[in-house]
Image (cartoon, rainbow, N blue to C red):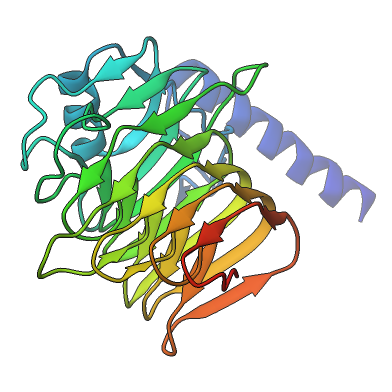
Amino acid sequence: MYKLKKRIASIITAAAVAFGSAGVLPDIGGLTNPLIITSYAEETSTPTVVTTWSELKTAMAAGGNIKLGADVTDPDKSSSSYLSVPENTTVTLDLNGHTIDRGLANASAIENGYVITVRGNLTVKDSSTAGTGIITGGNTTGNGGGVYVASGSFTLAGGTITGCKASGDSNVHAYGGGVFVDKNAAFTMTGGTISRNTAKYNGGYGGGVCVSGGTFTMSDGSISNNKTADNGGGVYVDQSGTFTMTGGTISGSDNAENRNT
């Protein structure tokens, strides 16, 4: 038995040496390539560093890991210049202490005036030591001034969504100043801040977050000082939506009828 084990060990060693020098395994005892050596290296993805709105828009549409190398502002401020994560696309966006500004904070609300719309999967984080990454400047006549999660999923792990508005108009209600979660969509908050956003005008709901048929899970982070013209200064969840909170804080939000969530 000892001799058999020693012989098998010798064969494996010889095969490994042959493989390393020739690139293929030799024929051993009439068996071709009897030894398969598989090596799994840890996958690392170097992020795509972007410094302009155009670069960021293109990179998000393509998917992958993205890192801001500078503050970026939408130069067009049009109803089609928002950032988007398409279906079947996964994006991890590192704010890296920088600002994404839609540029509509002091302008009239426009259709599709949100900063980002999600139909795939988006994770936002901020690797900067000071945690100064910001998403701001959205102002839409519809829902979701900051991030509109139409489908798929959005995870906020770091950074701040602030200064965004779901303004509505005389015919449209305004839902989700910071984040709007539509049906069949999911929002997970594991960190970061949603602060000083508003849902106003005709029936404003969810100054910070509005969940309309989707799901919102909050385990950490802060939702604070958001405002709405009607219900849910911090978080508004309709009857078909789900909100699970296991950590984090919701504070300092205000609404006209003084019913805060």
